[in-house]
Length: 291
Image 1 (cartoon, one colour):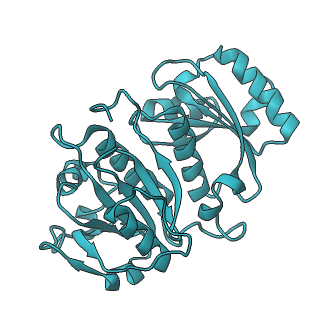
Image 2: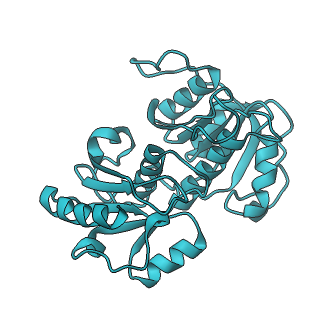
């Protein structure tokens, strides 16, 4: 099925004039790709090994969190990171191929216009950053940790938390500490979220009330931080979202940050920008306890 879908995706991409074809590397084999596909293709990889193999074949790659995601979650994360890297622009049409993680088979083909579904996340024009000074690898790392917390919790218990990334100069005046800042006094290189040695520390601190405030280059400014803003866009939020999501919407509305909220009750990871929901990543039904 995977080879047939790849061939169909190549033909479809030409027919609809797609800017790119996203293919999850989990389902790629060493077979030769259909004609014309490699030029448009972005291999979506979850490990160093997958990335190396794809690059050896001359393919462009997008690194996404290693945690298991639903099919639509796979697509959403890949598109978000591609947008942050400037690989996609308003008006781009893309073809996406995904499947059950680790299955080795592609079983879903999707065509979407980036500007319609991700409009709130797009830069105003080509060449501008999505969020000023936000490094794409930082967004990817935050999403990876958030998805892990949503899927696995901490020590078997569900965890809810909030990450506020970017525009810290405007964010910090709108905050105060609920606890002593556990990152105070450490050198910047010792508190960068890109350092995988910090992962367990971040996950443990996620059990504490409050938000993580993170610079666009990955340096963690604080944890256990209260957000004081109460501003919201006029259209408000969907019903059923709690105080954590309201805080995420509020801080992203009044500053130029991205807020990533993890729901304690459902494990869903919700990304906010400009006070609006960019996307929501549901955990797979098999991850963690049943919802």
